[in-house]
Image 1 (tube, rainbow, N blue to C red):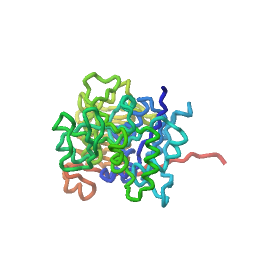
Image 2: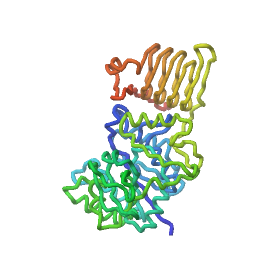
Image 3: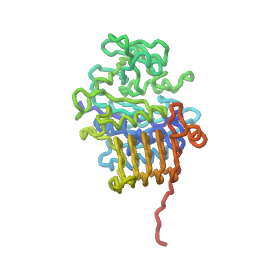
Image 4: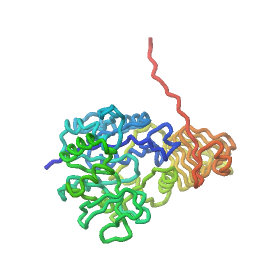
Amino acid sequence: MQLRVLAFVLAGGKGTRLYPLTKERAKPAVPFGGRYRIVDFVLSNLTNSGVYSTYVLVQFKSQSLLQHIRDGWDFGGMLKSQFMIPVPAQMRSAGETWYRGTADAVYQNINLIEQADPHLVCIFGADHIYRMNIREMIEFHEHKRAQATVAAIPVPKEEAREFGVIESSHDGRITGFHEKVAEPPTMPGNDEMCFASMGNYIFSTGLLLRELYADAENENSSHDFGRDILPSLVGKADLYAYDFNTNKIPGDPPNSKSYWRDVGTIDAYYDANMDLRSVNPELNLYNREWKLRTAGFEDPPAKFVFNEAGRRGTAIDSIVSGGSILSGGLVKGSVLGRGVRVHTGAIVEDSILFDNVDIGRHAKIRRAILDRNVRVPEGAEIGYNLEEDRKRHYVTESGIVVVEGHRSHVELATMSV
């Protein structure tokens, strides 16, 4: 049987713990790895898995996210069943509110499910960095004859108290949910690991519709899948946990480890970017069979110029995106976005530079994140004196300096009159 699968991507979170990177953008629109956005991971996972019918539910500070989806994820209307459509809050709940929780976000768009009449509905978050063959999770759901399947990742017991933990039997059947408890239940046969929910779900359509209508009428509900709907189904419906560690990506080496990172804080976001610098990073962006897709850019290639003592354009253990020019500057262990300029004598170490950052002559940057359009003056230093940096910028407890960006000038098309 050919399954009809509809996907909802939940991309409406505020991302407050990533401030100030989320001051002017939604968390899923935060740049990652030089040329991508966080949302590109879930959208690439869906399309690479053959799921082509997707609604992206947006909400807070969504303009940059909407522009990115427009620029990079328009399927061109080839088929009516192939689309990537952003959807703002529809104000269908009582009181005409914005999305009150993950379940309410889908409930406010329940008409889209009823119109499409799919066999399955995938509900995935847009906040994490990971690669996943969703087709395998769908096959698991069908093989188990499940009514709902929750993607789960094994985490050490001492870390599990920070997650929603799934209690399950040996065959994966879910027997309980535990939200950030001090002593979470461990996995069957492994007393050191727990199943943490990834916030990614597959529902059989009939069950999902029934539960969404019931939850909307429940005044005591927080209207969240993880807190309300799924726990209420334990023992009443066939719920299963899908072990993310069993997931295989086409084109990856056979023994590759599954990769998933929650980049909810500045430090976690910084570390995930820094992972990309290694010779063999755990997150493989170079697998041609599982491409990470993003907006199409018309950038020229990156360029490294000058070869004189004290004036040599060089990048070591770094990622440098298109349109960037290292004009006599040195970049070490860093991730550079598009259109970055590093001028003579400048040094950038262990840093993340967003698009269109300009590093002046002989400036020095260390362990910093510079948002888009930042201009660093000649001879300036960032990351060398944290007390001074705190007077002007945001600095994490671990000493990462975040320099806020600036809005770029918007060019309007002209017309003859």
